[in-house]
Image 1 (cartoon, one colour):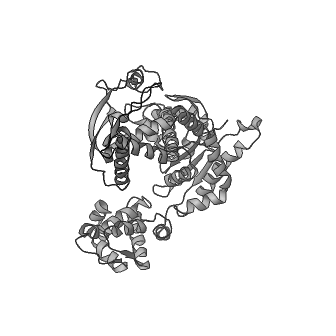
Image 2 (cartoon, rainbow, N blue to C red; image 1 turned 135 degrees about the vertical axis):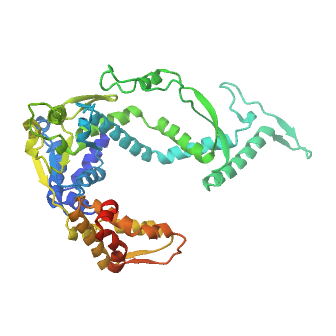
Image 3 (cartoon, one colour; image 1 turned 180 degrees about the vertical axis):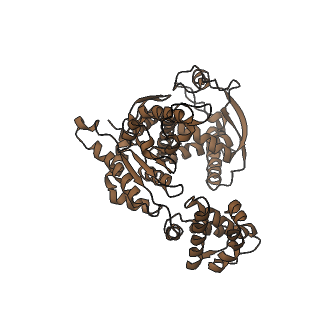
Length: 478
């Protein structure tokens, strides 16, 4: 059964209809409606499966997808954004790394372990956010204790014993209790220090704290002969060794970071985090297999790289089909992990994959190459548009950057032209064009002052003309 946290994530999915998912993706990604529609349906089906009768629920397999299209058209961004706004654990894996020299048949189960690590980081971050205020309060109290230790006579008396009281007769004949006076003075001083601490006026004050000493025996044990999932052997040994402490003198700012981690460890139950993370991996995990076309190839009777590629496909097959993978946190079932594969498929085609693997990716979507009109939309419509990013960077120096409509059109035309004459790298070409265009502006700030910078078609042509017309320069710069 899903944990309460996983249920909360699934409850958020209940409000995300396929149309809403596509609308959310439209905020950051231009075009590619077919791909967005396919991933939206696959995501919604996860929520639908949880609401299906228990008898059929385990039989409903995820709709694994292959995204086909050239580089820079949005394949990876679609999967990453999908995972981000749904709270699903996500990792991106290059399928080609399993064919590197010396690593034929490399541990493909490692991607599931990486997914588990990603989920644990995600869940722990959520838990830290929940207890952040309480942890910060505890850290402030610990820092105050270090800045102003309590008076020795203010220490609590042992259980069953009354605290000794010292009475002092004043010149006027009044009787006071010295211990009470010391406590009052300490409290007043502590209150003043606390206010200074909260105002950030003590961040550079140095204090002495105890930190965990790093073990001199830290080393990585060779993994040969070690069962899969055992992880670092030295890491396991450290769990049985006593924790040693050493004293360090650090600033209050550094101490806050160290003590905050300690307080999070006390307030957060690690076992609950692991249980929640593994449950979320199995119910909501997404693995993005990039460059899957690099492991596709025709059959070879003479050996060679094609044999290696087919071997990698066969290693991937049981994980995509659904199997139990041993991690250092426990067993993870991949039966309902969503796999989204992607590749350009310039040389090969999806039918070159082994039939068994093809059958595990029933949905195939072709993404369209980006046109000049798409580049204009990419620079104006998304919330994270490149023009907005550069405007924010230049605004940090106190200057203002603006783009005219014809200026954006000229940038788009230049990027499309360079993609056409050279290798087509899609929207990534806009980064090289924009960087070259604004290089002098970014270099001269802040010495040039806060004079507004306006980029129109004339400016773009003047700054990029020499490069775009010279084939050698274009090849190396753009």
